[in-house]
Length: 68
Image (cartoon, rainbow, N blue to C red):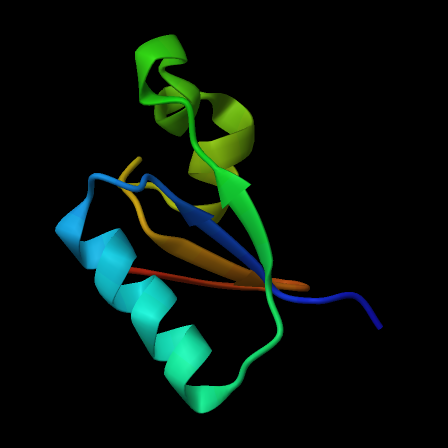
């Protein structure tokens, strides 16, 4: 079973809060930095997991959780 993936941008306050939360609860995640300058958050692949095209997004198998 693979680790959940946390897609984040270091300068995003909601992403930093998500990162602090996963660290605090001890959740072992793979971190994936989203390149905002390259508009990765607007790609079809990213929007498949987060239709809002924002960070953070937590991907665990078929389930994706994001902030509005």
